[in-house]
Amino acid sequence: MGNCIKRKKRVVAERDNVTNNSSYYIQEKTKQTVEFGNNGPINSIPIDGKSQQISEFENYKMETRLLNSPPISGSMEHIRQKSHPLPTPNLQSQTLMQHHNNKASFLPLPKPDTSFKLDDAISLETTSLVPADQATTSSQTSILPIPITESEILSSPYLKAFSLDELRNATVNFCEDNLLGEGGFGCVFKGWLDMETLNATRQGSGLAVAIKKLIHSSFQGHKEWLSEVNYLGRLRHPNLVKLIGYCSDGEDRILVYEFMPGGSLEKHLFKRNAPSLSWTRRIKVAIGAARGLCFLHESNSPVIYRDFKTSNILLDSEFNAKLSDFGLAKSGPTESQTHVTTRVMGTEGYCDPRYLTTGKLTVKCDVYSFGVVLLELLTGRRAIDETKCEEEKNLVNWVKLHVHDNGKVFRIMDTKLEGQYCKRSAYVAANIALRCVHHEPKYRPPMTYILEILENLPSQKNHQF
Image (cartoon, rainbow, N blue to C red; front, side, top):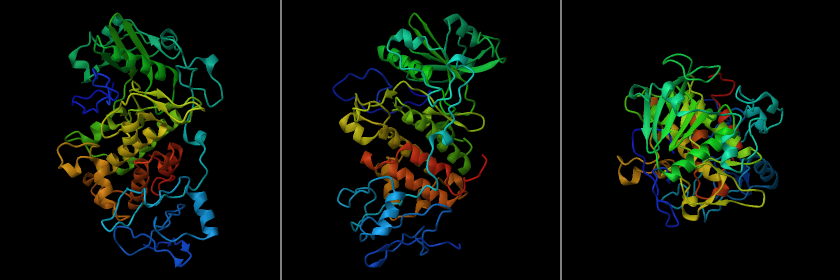
């Protein structure tokens, strides 16, 4: 499944010779920061092509050593190891942003100013749909045990089983006037339910909901429908869209969600004549989406989202982001596994190239997708844009070409922002996005690290959205 949009999505063919019958398959006073090597100070990297040194971004201390610089001394090496949680690619394997003169360049990672605590960044409060006798103070408050059978999935205490007649009444018989959108999975209608009983009520009164009606006769459609009931029936988090209930009546498969008046992030970024998202709102959306992924990845039973993209990030009236559409979600590897081997599924442009070639699924696949979306927020360009010339169609490749000399981030920024953004924050955001889309998964940062960086961007600290 995917978020409902009227435009057809390009999808990547499924591997292993599996027949693809579904559109869901792959689918300035500044303080200088200088490190010292064996031969003296190491040259720092200029910002925006100017001669000034990289400033200390408030509590950030930017790593300024180029990858091919001389080794740093023992004391500085100790500091660097503490501030750099990821292995550094060696020059031979580094293909990211190569100079024409073969000098490797890599935007440096900032140092978080505090130790990350998941509980500080993510609220795990239960919602009104969680039975009182199941509420606890543990980190698993909003996660039910993993069900085994379909009947166990459908018996989630979070969800209501609706009849088809109830949903017909809630949508005025699926009236075209209530159509919110449509995609390969079917159509989404706006409906209304009583806030207390969740029974259908008259149009325009009570609780507004989004009702997704799937196309009949597809086995894969049922499988994805059940997957969504499974995950959203067990998980509750402020940055996951709330599934209120479902309908399984004959061949009909329907899902009932909370209504998100802001629509999808895709609409705000790419719909013609849509008002431009401000810089502050773009960062707010990125932070909310990162919190949702952190929640999925850091639970005792990790969940790999596998279809992170702008059309699956929904916004409320205050631009709070929530992840929707868990039809492709997959339980992560257990302690004895390093990855899950699956048929390759996802959306072209957002899908990890290493996963495409190997079928090995890890949480770092979601990190790659997050990096692509973060680049879309920065540039205002689609992950894959068929209207561009060949060398500009793929966003990741285009960005790498334009930020090859460590600092000229202004080259890639969305012109709709009209320069109204914090250049220091844009530098750090572009930096972390490029780390996310590194071709080697082991060099991609974990979502917890990414979230902390975004929450502490220079212009966002102590800022109320």
